[in-house]
Length: 77
Image (cartoon, rainbow, N blue to C red; front, side, top):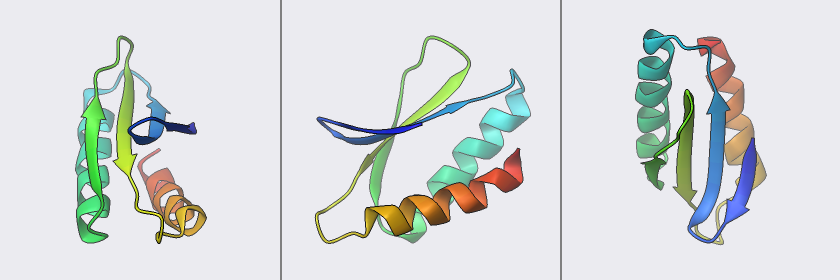
């Protein structure tokens, strides 16, 4: 899921208890957002989910960015 919050947009990814999946998801997310020069940080999550807070400026096409991210992310699943 992706939702707007005070610090930016939070992308929450529900995973399947696989340590390899979480590691790959974190590595992919870091590479993607660093490539696009977008500030982000991981959020603590009580379950086995990955939550990423993404800070976007007003001039970023949010729809396009999240479409690219999710399209490439589904390769990990």
